[in-house]
Image 1 (cartoon, rainbow, N blue to C red):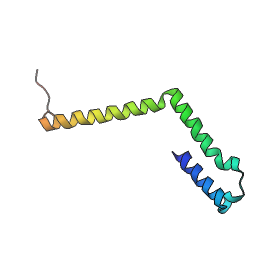
Image 2: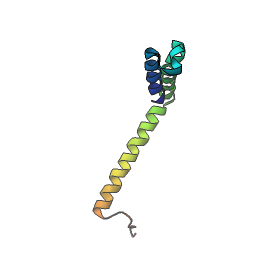
Image 3: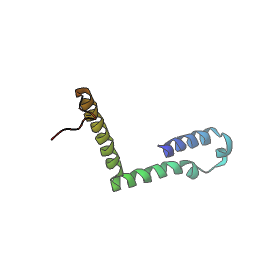
Image 4: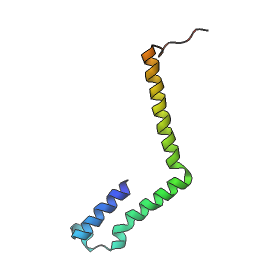
Length: 81
């Protein structure tokens, strides 16, 4: 996400000829977009994106379970066998 924000900012600055970016080559200005594409390709190819999504779902699931246990008064108590 950082690379996309940087790319948009650099593109706007170069288009409007603001600051140090005004005299920069378009290749340098558009390079954050290439970096973002490379990042997404790597993240999808290695399963990083799916793994993070699964971790997020597992965390939400565990929070729901804990909330229900607390509502039932089972949180913190040990079962006697």
